[in-house]
Image (cartoon, rainbow, N blue to C red; front, side):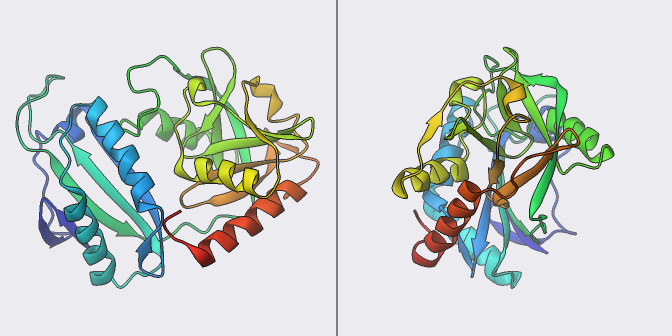
Length: 278
């Protein structure tokens, strides 16, 4: 693979990041993962805005948007991957071995990879660990993913594809790399951002699509048990798009994919046929 590293195109075998890079040492970095369709990154502007928000919170400086966008297009073309996942990663650059940030230039990487083949229906498990909705990085897309690594490994050891977190209040929050929607009393609901979940780009577009096609959708605080008790539920993320949840903690949901999920999946496909910058 060819990637873009600090302004230069290099092969992944030749790419080098300093051992003192703060992203490597302490997870001081931010990133975005975008789905690429026919050579075009989907919802670039929305992802860029979220990247800017996360970077500002960690006091990281981003390359200019036109530089990142041009580099992304070049990486996609040079790897001949018109349909892929694209990741933009920015770290704090070289620093001390501790938590103090330095004034060194950030490290910037853009890379592509093959898409995951997600099953029609996801199996999920709830985990005992919680999201801290009041934590310093709540709502930021940072490279500090050790919690997600551990939770996902636990889910996969139980034969599931995703792990679902509650927050410290015991409310349904999010997956390791996805947002969650449930049908509750005939209303499509998703946890509010105040729950500590990430402001997913696909989540936001799904809410907009639901409102556009006449599906009532609410951001609602719910207990973790609401997921297993839902008549239907689904996950959203850039690479999953909209994926039905088939069972929770080994128990099958009544409908998967349910009629609301199918409607939104259809609306998503229609959106992709009309605009890749919604």
